[in-house]
Image (cartoon, rainbow, N blue to C red; front, side):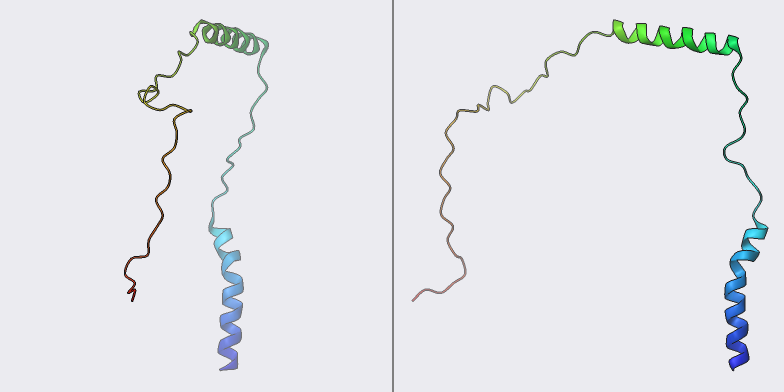
Amino acid sequence: MKVFRVAAAIAVLAWPAYARAQMPNINLIPETASKTQEERDADEVREKAYRDSLRKIPDAKVSSDPWGTVRSGDAPKAPAKPRTKTGSTAN
């Protein structure tokens, strides 16, 4: 029985190494070449056009709150009703 336990322990410890060997080698971050001067100039022109287009967007209007006229900050709050116990038997 002791031999079976040792064999099981070795198998459990060896399994991650075996699984790692079966995995394909995938590089998720490939080596990228540096950009040429033409590509950098094109990126700069594209970025400038993007910034100019952002300036053309009009400012946001004031939010239209449909309940804005119903609510008011200075309205008096109704006094809270005292809570009563329910389900109790009073004699």
